Image 1 (cartoon, rainbow, N blue to C red):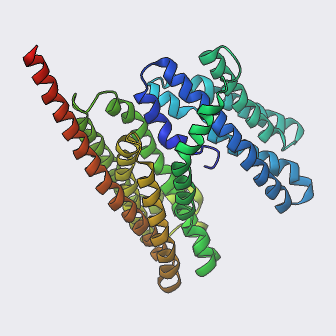
Image 2 (cartoon, rainbow, N blue to C red):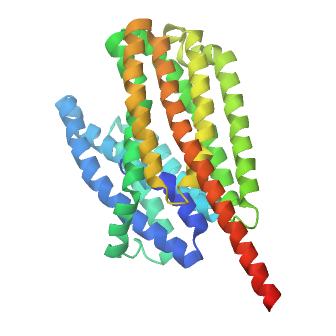
Image 3 (tube, one colour):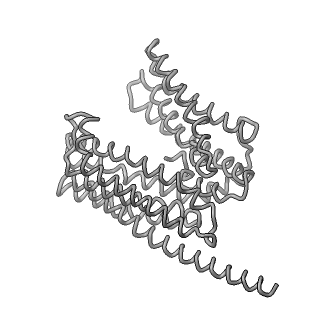
Length: 369
């Protein structure tokens, strides 16, 4: 989350709105150097912490595991989405990582060397990134322009901050349950949370599928209609997720993770409502506010959400138990949706007025001509 530095949110929109392939490659180049810098600093600090927390014999493995997992922040999937070339993800990310992961399994089977897994993951990620860079720039790393990198650090700071703060409250239910309810309740809540997070992939896929389609035309050409279609699609995905979580969540979670940590059915309505709200919020942020450079609104929404949600989760968990903690999470997402929806509606009205005024001026000029 830290090493992505907000590019997973803003990158796809910026690439989709870029004028040509040169501009798209330039955006990816300074995103690469921005994220690599953040990754090196943050992963080094966290690797040292991880090494200190485990037995000495596993210190190196733990540190390398941090580096391997942190490299996911350098994903190029948002670039592939923005350019409408999904095959880039297949050839330069999925295939290399899958191949090296399979190789690490073979090495561990033969030698018992646990370290081969993070080493192979790191190698697969960098080989994929290097191959992509050769494809885009005919060199193993993108060109470095310090002025662009500095601008990227400033531009993405609100989104990177929102990502970090958002991650703190969306993952808070489990540690809060551990602290105020107990280990067994936390284990059950963890099971429900894992199943819920698997479902979040559907929201990501829907957002990625529709983003370029929504942004590839101007407001005057009918972008507002495409925003409506995207919002309806996300509403449908959210409702399907809510229904699946409520009616199938308890059974599927027990089957996947075991009866010993099977969660109470009472947990799933709150997770379902949270899922629906996140699905509705996603197109408002990614397709309206971020392309309009309203990053500070997104940050304000996330800060407000954390400010309301974290105390609510703690209070509800202390007084009413683990199920109420998840309703506190749902409350935090309601805060995000309220702020984001209000700002998005204003932005749409503003853009429509500007598009109408531009059309009138153009018609008058053509009439005079």
